[in-house]
Length: 213
Image 1 (cartoon, rainbow, N blue to C red):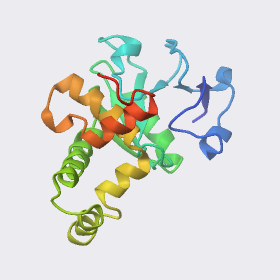
Image 2 (image 1 turned 45 degrees about the vertical axis):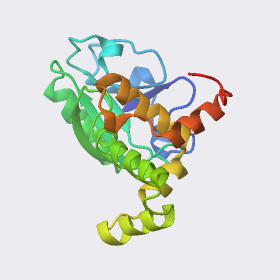
Image 3 (image 1 turned 180 degrees about the horizontal axis):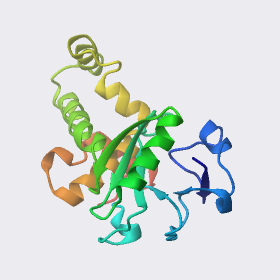
C-alpha cells in the first residue's frame, strides 16, 4: 500500500528520523494520504485519508457527518517521551470498512499496534490513564507517601514498568496539564481536573507564575 505524508511543522506521531517517513511516496502516486499538522483536503479518489489528531475530535476537520474514506489517528506518546508503537485509529459513523481495513493494514505492516476508537475527545488511552496520574499526584500533595514509595508500590504490586508519578514527570507536567485540562473542560469530571503540580508547571512554562487565572 503506497502512502504519502503531507506534513506542516512538527508531527507528534512521526519524528524526523522515523523510518515510516522515509518510506512514504509522492502524493500523486499514493493510495493513502496522511496529514500531519497540515490542513486536510478531501479526495474521494483515495482509498483512505488519515488525519493526525491531538486531543481534538476528527469532526473539527471534516464535520460531524464525516466522509467514508477519512479517518483520524493518534499515536500514543507520553508527553515528551518518544512516540510509542500504539496507534488509535479514529472512526466516525460514516467511515467506510475499506478505509479502516486499509489504514489498519498500513500501520500494522509498519510494525504498529492498532486499536479502533470512536470520535471522542481524549479517546482510549488518555481517558483511562490520566485520572490515575492525577490521583497519584494528589496523594503526593496530601502526604500519603513519597513519590519513590508510590512508584515502587505500583511497579511491584501492579507490575507497571514505571511508576505513575515518575512517568508523568518524565513526560512533562506542563504537557499533563494540557491533556487533563482538555478532558476536564469537555466532560467536567473531577478526576480529569488538573492537579496542583501540573497547574504550577504549566503557569511557569507560560510565564504566568504569580498571576491570577
